[in-house]
Length: 334
Length: 286
Image 1 (tube, rainbow over the protein chains, first blue to last red):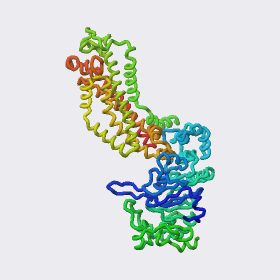
Image 2: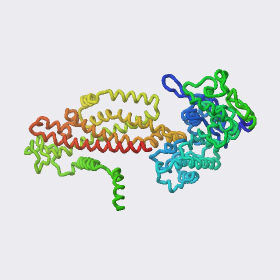
Image 3: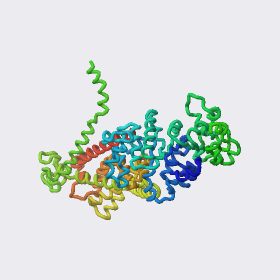
Image 4: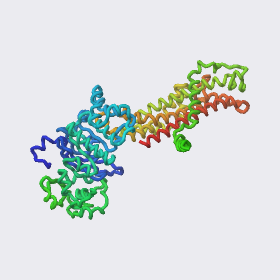
């Protein structure tokens, strides 16, 4: 997409094409959680996925994992479309595609011991004999002392330590892609930094590709190479982290960026400030016509209600789905 | 001075963690009943089925500790042997019901969809069916015997266990460790066995305990109606029924077995209820 065609093809490890996830909401209505997302994740990068609560970013993460399978669209992992694979074929690919979750406590079975939790994936894959070697190795890698945790259960650990155990469990099968669903949102700020550093270390050590889902822009800015901004089940802007944060083109991205608490004056804050009173995200059961952000957008026109904006390159290297991208500042920046 | 301060500070903490005396009384009583029932043939007791004509209607005597019944059989011995029948019915029926219902409930809760709908339908049918009518039908067709009684009661307890485990499974299956297990390729049956079962066992066990108490009473009622364990095998319900004719003149014949049953069921309920509460507190702390 953003990258020149030559390098894009061979390096893309994960591709979402027109991914749609819908849930029945009772009474014949449907929740449009994810409505046609297309993304490419390149090998070795960290792709940030940001948006407000309920915008469908976690659903996207789970749809990549096929938990549950998406309603339509495709998820191509290393050249194979996961949505068309049989259950057995999909299971065979699972070790390469791992996920860590938001709630570190709920991520670990309270009735099992730490080494059992971390070694279980190996047992599932008939590699039980390797546990003695690999489990202490991966526990050490995530900064836990294998001897100390040997007899412990999850409730004897802090949230940060539990998240380390989750990361260890995800890494023990040596995956290619790690999907991190708000992995630090439930942690203290000081612990957040530790876990983010750990993820960076692990990414280097295990050669991972990360999809990092979060609502905290500061966190995403820190860890991501590229960022996709989601609003109400759609991607509205996609770009390199620095450019996107310094000069957002989509009005929604501007709103998000300006809402980061900061000591300095933020570019575009005026637009955002004017907008802040405009209320909350509409319901995904009945999303607005045309551009989904138009009900809150200060720049919205009639065209935005009639015609859905498509993802397009609005400025060199900048992709956004907007009829009225804020190009003045974008031009300065790029 | 510092000593008293420490004492007053520590006092409430001790009270919080102290086990109430009722807990120990209940366990002691239950332990005694179970031990007596298990080792009944080894104990120096009268034969529970052979009458001693000197003891007909007798009250408490040195040789017959709880007196004799209408045929002169030793009440104490019959209470001990009756415990075997009552406990066997309660534990076996609930055990079978808990295992069958537990497995079906976990399957329904985890897989959902059509499996769940079919099981919910079967559950509703069994729950809507009058329990007593089912037991009477079984006894009428197959005859009154211990296995038939256990089977009938087990069938009656299955739906409740299905509902209980299904509800617990629904909660546990949403936990992220179950999602994680699916993500690393754990097969559904293994997830049920490894991740869900350990979390379902405690609430099921606590409820099963209470259910055992209920079934002991149910067995008593059925025996009283002549639908339970056939004589001469002693059972508590049968003994209470046996004293019915002389209830006004010799109430102790019915009263002793009734009192033993009452205390046993009370102990079981108390222990079960307390275990359940303790478990609930732990769960809410998670």
